[in-house]
Image 1 (cartoon, rainbow, N blue to C red):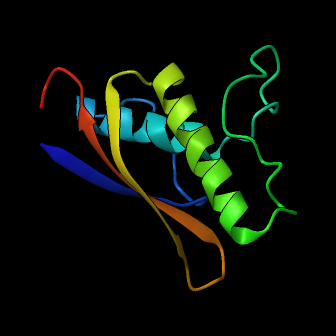
Image 2 (cartoon, rainbow, N blue to C red; image 1 turned 45 degrees about the vertical axis):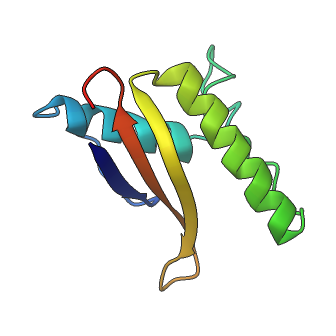
Length: 105
């Protein structure tokens, strides 16, 4: 089964997710919204934010690649099937991700 989530910056953290799907979806959001280098003692966690000055097509390709590599490394229970970028009403970039849970789908 394929699941879908929209990743935005303004999401809350649930310290006791009710099920596996909620847990891995929250982990996915945490990985994608954490700038690489911002977590002390765990500098490799997250996604590189150095795309700001790149042309749009190059930036989207780089961030997509970074998301794939980070998810493979930090949340191996997820297999990404599709990544799409959208703008919200405030002009902020949102990431729509489709994924499968490994071993359950």
